[in-house]
Length: 126
Image (cartoon, rainbow, N blue to C red; front, side, top):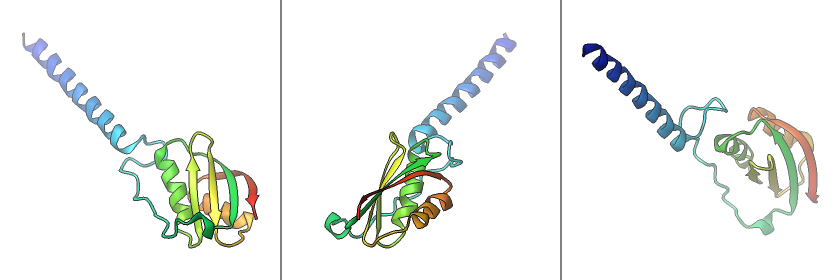
């Protein structure tokens, strides 16, 4: 009888750990990008009038796997004055609006510094 009780307790502990892990993943996403905590707060662009952003660029980005990854890339771009990014995880690309003409290397450096790999760069509108 005591061995049955011990086995039952061990199974309950395993189930409790699994449930806690699932709840954490639902709340905070997976740990694919090295983040086990909540995603960082979203950097909001102060000027959301698209008419003020005459330049548009599109970049394909490698290494994004979850919503936390998207948040890291958007935050990296949106933290630069005059830039506004919308990142699509499914397409693995960032649509970047800019108030001023931007050099490809400058935008690629922002992505690299965030920990991701820029694959392609396209000028949508200049």
